[in-house]
Image 1: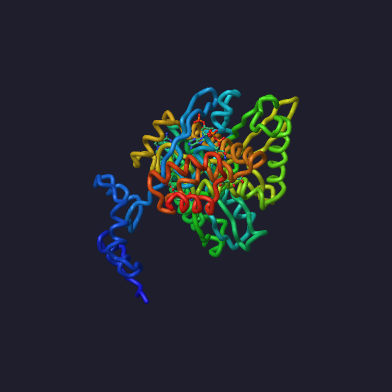
Image 2 (image 1 turned 120 degrees about the horizontal axis):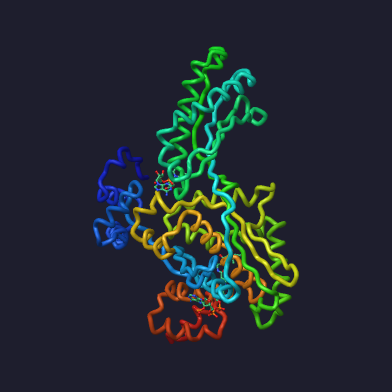
Length: 438
Ligand SMILES: CC(C)(COP(=O)([O-])OP(=O)([O-])OC[C@H]1O[C@@H](n2cnc3c(N)ncnc32)[C@H](O)[C@@H]1OP(=O)([O-])[O-])[C@@H](O)C(=O)NCCC(=O)NCCSC(=O)C[C@@](C)(O)CC(=O)[O-]
Ligand SMILES: NC(=O)C1=CN([C@@H]2O[C@H](COP(=O)(O)OP(=O)(O)OC[C@H]3O[C@@H](n4cnc5c(N)ncnc54)[C@H](O)[C@@H]3O)[C@@H](O)[C@H]2O)C=CC1
């Protein structure tokens, strides 16, 4: 059995690779070769990647694609998407092309408020704590003034701090619940710095607050951290068209198509098993652009799914209706994004992707990404209620299957032609490849 290792972080990259390949892989030489194959030949780019994280061995590439023809608030975008799953970019592109001729997407930011909390334990008289908070609040702002000065010049900063009594849920548990505006930054580091300053001020002021007993002076700060639940950092995107323009299939009338889409969305509203898959399809679009723009997809995922169950049950992020002969389809979701900070200014490809997106502000990016999610959902649900998902998805997945089966370029060409008129299944592709080889 492999022995644990101490001081691994202090080893060089080569030593780390030696240790991992020797202890955990069958073929050391081949494993090292695979890791090295994915190193960037430009050593300064590789060093940048080595320094993004810790214990870097290599780079795991995800393809970067582009979905053109997105008309958003009358501006035409080509949206970069980083994703490993076939058919996602084709689906987004197809939806963009469809809505291009129907007025495009309309998007609007409804709020940009971020949240952070200092979680603390107070064992004492709550009335005295309320009194103390009135005294404390202005001091929180003064003590963090040097941290907030630049953000305030940009129009952001701390918008409010309130004391929250959570003792009904957990003994002696209180919060300083703070709200922020962080302009073009996602804001995690700015918020966390402010919160840690709040925590220090809370402790020092409590220690000298005359009304407190000696036990009450011992406020215990458990932790200070931003929240990724951002229900007031919301963006809405929508498309609409007269029902008769919703021609998606030769088999279904536009009216019938619209009704089936609405039924599908209603099912995702009331049935969590369906809602999770429905929203997964939305996240195909969202995550791909979040990743391409160097944003934190874990933060986005956590916030979006929390929002999807804000009414007590996990539910659809999109909505659809027919009103006065108009089909309307829309999404509303929280997106705390940055176009400065994090990786955005560091990763050359991220910078390029932001340039392709016309160097958006954080609010512009919220709108673009919401649209990518809406488009993705429209394409997936349209397929589901007409042809079924497998037809289009497997058509795009064909090259992956052929690569898995080791097909050469001529075989790929022949079989792509063959499957233009035949249904793609893994078994079917295997059979046709064997026939071709005989
Ligand atoms: C896959 C398509 C687009 C085929 O659709 P199609 O009608 O066969 O496509 P087409 O060949 O007629 O081309 C029409 C347009 O689609 C795009 N397009 C078409 N092919 C390509 C391609 N190779 N590369 C780039 N773009 C492509 C492109 O915009 C093209 O226009 P053009 O460029 O020719 O002017 C359609 O069937 C579709 O949208 N399917 C949905 C696929 C999908 O949602 N995939 C996600 C993975 S499945 C999943 O994870 C989520 C899910 C489904 O479970 C979510 C849920 O349940 O809700
Ligand atoms: N729970 C979470 O989500 C956590 C996330 N993180 C990470 O934090 C990073 C994001 O933090 P940030 O504070 O956004 O990044 P950051 O620390 O790189 O800071 C961005 C900074 O850019 C400056 N700035 C310049 N121009 C600006 C403008 N126009 N608008 C706003 N600020 C401007 C500000 O000083 C701002 O604080 C991500 O990498 C994320 O993964 C870190 C801790 C926890």
